[in-house]
Amino acid sequence: MAASELMEDDGVRIQVEADVVTADPPSPPQTARVANGNPSRHDAPPPPPPPPPPGVGGDEPEGRSQRSRLASALAQSQLVRALSGGLRRRCDYVKIGAAADERGERLPAEWWKTAVAFLYAVFNLVFTTVVITVVHERVPDKAVSPPLPDKFFDYVDRVAWAFTVTEVNGLILVGLWTLQWLLLTHRSIVGRRCFFLIGTLYMYRCVTMYITTLPVPGRHMVCAPKLYNNSSGKIWRILRLISGGGLSLTGSHLMCGDFLYSGHTVMLTLSYLFIKEYSPRWMWWYHWFCWLLSASGVVCILIGHEHYSIDVVIGYFVTTRVFWWYHTMANTHALRQAPNNFLSRTWWNPVFNFLERNVQTAVPVVFSFPLPLPSSCRQRYRMVEGARDE
Image (cartoon, rainbow, N blue to C red; front, side):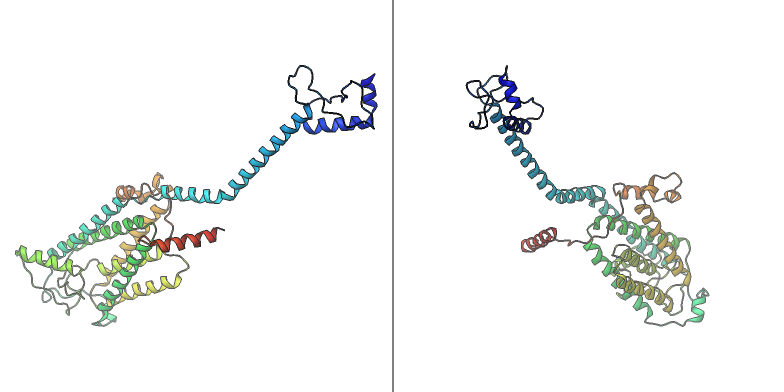
């Protein structure tokens, strides 16, 4: 009877149902009773929390226990939201670190490979001076073998100072490329590419000079006397040529026979190709300036009548093709394993695989200071980077 009256009492029913549903929806509603077992009335004071259901031990009322569990759940939820919000705010920094690590794995420095490529370039440059000294002894006398006919020489008379312009332009381009290379972030990878191409091109030049010896292109050329079997004199000439960089400006290059193909054309063209490839595209004015230096230097070789036209044409053709073949394979990773890749049939493909095996992507054009910055500069740099991140 008391239970039925309690069910008919709307006020008590509403209160009990609200407490139970809010705290624990799955549990069935409990009937509220007063201490003497009679149902409460509208004018009675609020009943105490209901006792625990039968079979459950403990003296703590069910409503209080449920409210404490609810408060604990709310506190845990707030903690989870705070942690997730902090992770979301820091997720960009985590991504940057992961990207940097991934880039380091795909573009390893491997300076020891750069050192091997450097030794390869030095060996071929020194070997070139030896071949020039040998070929000089085989150059025919101008009185016996006059200069070969050249179409460019038929239309353009010789200008004495033109070859000086060639060497000055070459020195400027080499200096610009050296400075640019030192500022590159991935200078080790770019450096071994440059050293390998220099060594390969000058090795080709040794072959062409030795197998075909051309007469001097002009009667104005003065060649050093031949030494024939004087080995010590030839060694001194080699050392003098190396010390002067093989330039006429330094007075070290007095030998003839190194015509096919032009070494000056190789350096002018190769310097421009590396400058353009590893500099931002928006620096178009810089590219045009270097192109003018390279093109005018090559033309001045012919104006000075220091090389035949075929020497310049072959030098340009060999330099550009080797550069483009190498960088096509380096920048297109899928070509390295393609079965129909005919570029892989070059003799230097094993050397290429050795140098580029761990380079898994194209080298980005990124610059950085090559030397460690002072502590004050590093602190300012970090402050600027932090302001950008905010």
